Length: 384
Image (cartoon, rainbow, N blue to C red; front, side, top):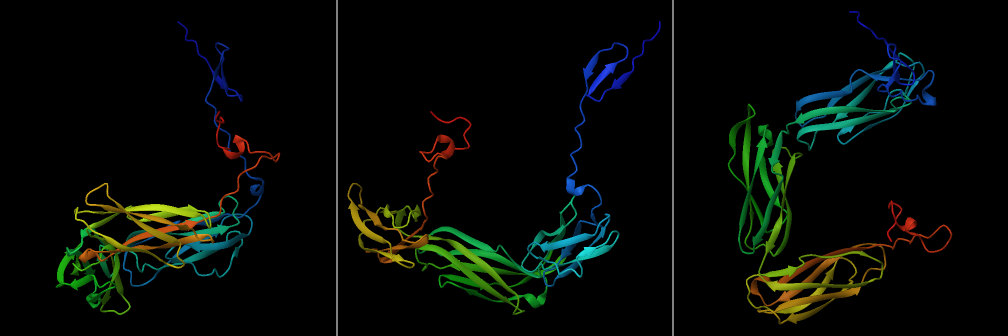
């Protein structure tokens, strides 16, 4: 029995024709190559780098590090480098020259400053040239920074604590250099008390280091309100300082709802009307004897206090009225209450807001009222 063979021919139109049957069937089309821009046709410059990245590996933070990226103009026209911009931590000295002939090579020098950084890092250098195929080339600098001295964590958050309850938080200061042991810890707030404990030698990742515990106490006499302070830590080197941020909130018996008043998106010189409810967490009766606006800048609020006898013990409602600033911008301040509670003679409720000009309403091209297509151009079907 004779075997019938067929030969398939691929046509330009993307159809295959069987020589045996004469039938045509569809073939997967190969997408055409994108057209070459007119500016690229002919001879042009081409920037070619030996490497697009450099990895310093594990480095300290006590000094800068230098590296180089070599390149060649592998094109057929002069290469012109118009700019070299480094991201945070990278600086690129001015190039000795900016124009390179075909087959001519050059070097882009990069200086990396790891100070104040820790852990795995990547920074970039963007090179802009007249190469039409790659007008911007991004060079990467990688590193894993182990500071000579560091504190962990850098932020201590007490959360919400009841007034009169001291709260203790801890951090660890690690020194890879004995000349950088911590010596003094100074707080920015009198309600925060830091204390350096006895240093110990430990092994971390195969390296012997000195670790000094830092104990931070938010004292029982801390005032009700937000805690936001800094602890400055001196080391054996006066130029090497560490910072620890302490955040949180001390709460008392009084509770404001909302805890902070937001007056956002007001027009200049617009009326203000807001309310705040003051209650007791413990259910003990109290009195508000005075309420005033303590603004940062020009005052904008009047505060009226009314008693709500629908609940027991009675609560208070603060009605805030006034006029927003006549100028565009932010404004803020505190509503300061005076109470008969011995431990909370003063109670503050922060407020903040901003004014902005109203956006002009769109108009129809004909000058009449705007159509739905003017006001909602993104809708596929206008609402009825």
